[in-house]
Length: 167
Ligand SMILES: Cc1cc2nc3c(=O)[nH]c(=O)nc-3n(C[C@H](O)[C@H](O)[C@H](O)COP(=O)(O)O)c2cc1C
Image (tube, rainbow, N blue to C red; front, top):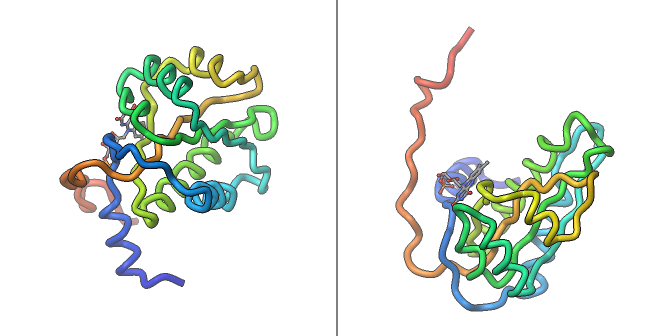
């Protein structure tokens, strides 16, 4: 078990990172991030997902062209595409793969590796680049890399008294 105060601080310190060093990640680091995704919870433990590890610069550059607010993905030495298998869990594939993305982002942060959820992209075009089919839902492509420059200043959060009610 992890100390809860340390864990909460860790959650607060994680930031979306949009600038990466030109330095490759080790296979161990990539494997740990994939493992963190693999151990995510899923509805009825169906695990309706596949992951694609993308190191090919040409493909990363093409994805960047189709990402409206994610051009920085071409800087990353590696990215992981998270694919939901629609037929495997028709109701929950988005929830399940979203949990995968969080696990992967948190694992990356423990390793000092930055990442950012990329949502704003032309999914159909990126799906084609990744050779995905009808049963594949492209949730996101997470760029992964050592952080270039300063860690961004903390983003704000709504206070608990504005978002929590007690009954
Ligand atoms: C569903 C989702 C979609 C997002 N899409 C993008 C995106 O397309 N480009 C981007 O730069 N950041 C994207 N983000 C990152 C958010 O902007 C970021 O998480 C938020 O501003 C809070 O900052 P933080 O992650 O540093 O705490 C996305 C985040 C989520 C959860």
